[in-house]
Length: 238
Image (tube, rainbow, N blue to C red; front, side, top):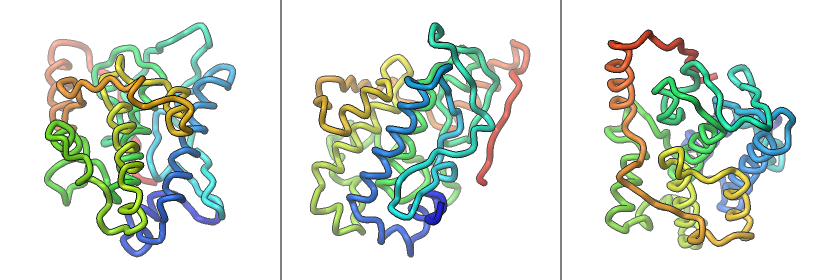
């Protein structure tokens, strides 16, 4: 893929400003289509488990190809959840993955929401150079009804379509809630393509927003003190 991976564009200050709103929107919708295909049209269905910018490849016209299925798991159509070891990349992993419980395709929906925020913010969700995660920032702004402040202020193109950008942020919020409140990728895609109204499917509940990475690890460690340790397969940047 001649444009490489998404991380080279959104985390590189010299490249990020070359991504117009239309290109960012195209990438988000392309990723949604790819995940919707994996979750609903493959037989058996596929949970990727490692959706992150490094695994999103871009063609010359910024079409999306999802790569690296090393952590993926097949799930029969008559199943809704599967047991799995702790796997994925910290910062993109759904909270339920830390609990050693059954998980579903909604784990990928969470990761999708994180990637959408990173595309809009131009920074990583979990960054050692930052004091707060994107999730923490979004939760605070949503509670104070200041989501407009989250639009990339360095991109004039996005400033012109601020309402649409805020809609994208709300979609990301919807995808990063507790697993039972997350929509399917089919629903997300319909909202993105304006085939379904966002407010008709949005169920915001900020008290159940994901915890911080540190909290999740602490809870996981506490749980493991009284239960057998859960095997893990953690992925790093590639």
